[in-house]
Amino acid sequence: MKLITLTVFAALVACGSCTDKADRSDKPEGGGSSVTHVTEPNDAIDQKLMVALSQAKNFHHKAKVYMSDGDTASAIASVRVILSLRFPPNAPEAEDVRNDARALLARLLVGQGQLDEAMNVVKEGLGSSRESFFTANLYTVKGEIHEARAQQLDANDKAKAVEERHAAIESFDASNKIDKKLQDQLLEPR
Image (tube, rainbow, N blue to C red; front, side, top):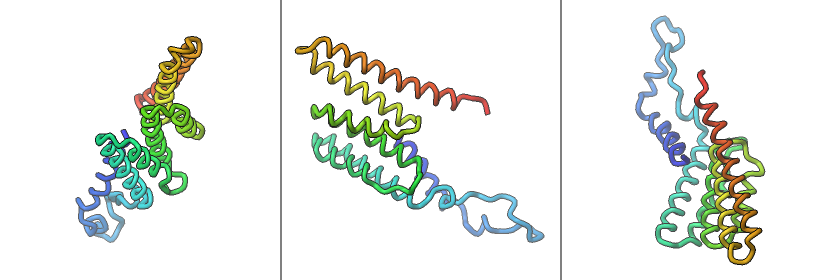
């Protein structure tokens, strides 16, 4: 989903070269204002935001390359850089990008057996998030962490393993609840 959002932003920027600027500023006969005004990509999307989104996309790609090479430590380092990128104040995209990075980071940490750190990464994102696809995804990852904890506990503490499985179900339900709410909003007639 993040890649789709970033692709849309890139397409908007590219569309700026599709039309001639002089055509957009021409006034109709009589000197009145232009009948049609095409929004400039620079007007629609802040340049600072575009730079931050581009950086995030590149660090995400780097992480994927490291992952494909089996270099999890470098993938983790690349994803952590995304969490430190500077975005314009109050940009909702910043929260989405960071939560997407947190989900990937947590999954990488789970793969390394660092379940407590993975849970801390997820909780950090959930602590200040509005409801979005990315928040729902964090709940999904939280459920996956509970599942991993249950698997670790199966041999030694069956009761705790059951608790972790129930916590996983609660997390998956929270994710589904957010997704359902968002879906209902998107499907409402306008």
